[in-house]
Length: 169
Ligand code: SF4
Image (tube, rainbow, N blue to C red; front, top):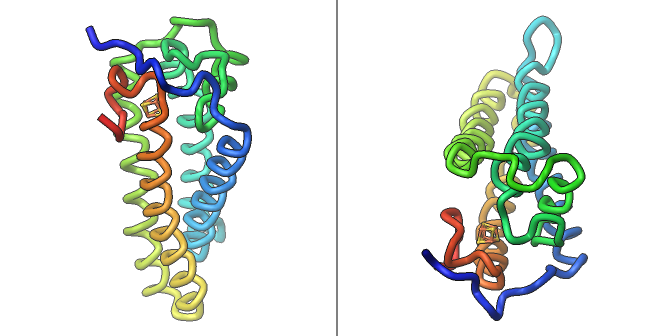
């Protein structure tokens, strides 16, 4: 059984929490806007489904199955989502193995769908070429920044030897 990383942060700074969430909000916003010109029955259904899926998985389902058994439950982790989890769910009330599988699927879909759909949207709606291009470029840039931030965040984390999603093992 791996141990906690003793020198890890007890609580992450609030500035990290704010920056992480602001960056992710911008990321999801760019994705949703970049796909919004693709409409069905006059509605940007893919963008709406994308945002609803994001909210359901990141706001609730993963918070239950991942964060309720994390060291940071009811503390400030880098995203602040452990705090959110403690407001919504009881400690140890989730299924960590299920959470890890769902996290892989969730982040995979949140990344892949815009990368496929935004270019299709640009191809079908030439008037959206410039806006779509800006969204896609911003989306990819934030993805890269987020990866770097994740490496740094995980390297300061008490769970870095235990967590299967750690980017700093
Ligand atoms: S190791 Fe990384 S992914 Fe795992 S709990 Fe810590 S910050 Fe989150």
